[in-house]
Length: 259
Length: 256
Image 1 (cartoon, rainbow over the protein chains, first blue to last red):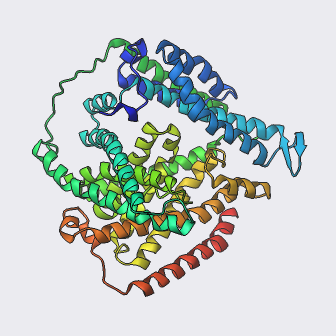
Image 2 (cartoon, each protein chain N blue to C red):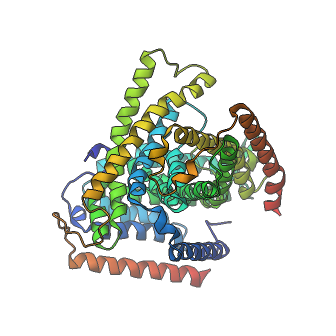
Image 3 (cartoon, rainbow over the protein chains, first blue to last red):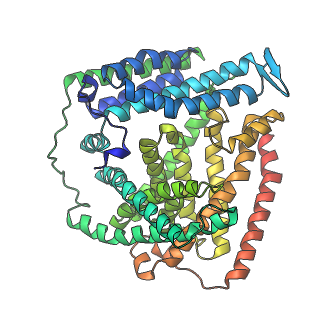
């Protein structure tokens, strides 16, 4: 499998050896707490007190920083700036330039949203950095997820790199025969079909053969399938999951009770 | 100060979930879902997701002002039925979240709605001629807007995409968040989704009847033979009228 496509980095830390399902639960719990938490700083506090320590335990600080700087900060930062300037509904003005004025209330609201998004993406980055997609899918299949889902997700991750290189080849080939991909808008729009056509038809033709191939390997069989690769599920995992469930219930109860 | 969403939003969310659960249960009981998922459908879905993602990138290379990142989803919706289309859309955004950036995940319901609408339109025969496909594209844009706007509002109305500049402008002119987001989507979405549907139609047009017949809803793709140019004119006029009607009538309605 092509590892270039996933964020996964293996450092054999305690986080990596947790059951994939436990790691999924941790991520979802962090996000639920961040969204439903009643305290204004919940999301920011969770980034510092939950995501960062786990990243440190997993020894992935460098990889996480790269993801944070390249992906999360631009999105969250851009949203924070745009929303601070453009969202209506504030009264306390901080300062003004030209036609725009920035109010304290909008900045607070923009910060809340930006911190939630930062938390959400960070939590998923934690999951993706420490869990191999096919391992997660194998474990979920064992827990009752239909095997078709894991087939779709895992084979997609394999097909995309193939198709990307095919798209590159078609683009170069069309360019070499003088195809216009860089001038006016109409020419660029016109060059879409000759690029998309060969790519799509080529991939669709393979579908039929693949259907016959997996049919011959018992794809639609309903019997329980055995796996060569066993994924451990320890008592620690089970305890962690119950604690997480309790945390979510307490947060939801607080939310309903206080509002 | 508004913080995220209120208990009113939470109740609306619960109502939507219950309605969706009832529809899903009904479709499952009447075996409508099971009919969509043959082995051919399961194999087409990964390819369709790859088509979504790779064509999305090709469009970025060509610097075109559309996304076109749901052609594969529409293909699955038409060939395999609405439920397979919804699943293809949902998984497409899931995969994009895994390989690019988890910012795709909040938009999973929108992608599912696109596939579902494409499938429903194709089931009533609206994927057989150019102008019908354009109308389907418009309906898909409508569904995407209806599902996507609450999510956009929940995320604060302004995201990192280019069309947010329109939203930002509308907000600054004193309009509400929901109104601004809806207007932006009504300007951007129809163009994108109609070109998506027309491209998907061109692809289906190029596939052989023998190949198409192997899919659960292959009969949706049997095209009617008509004169192309007059069709195209009708399609364009229909779309322009629909867009104007929506912006003039539906957006003010929502505000009241």
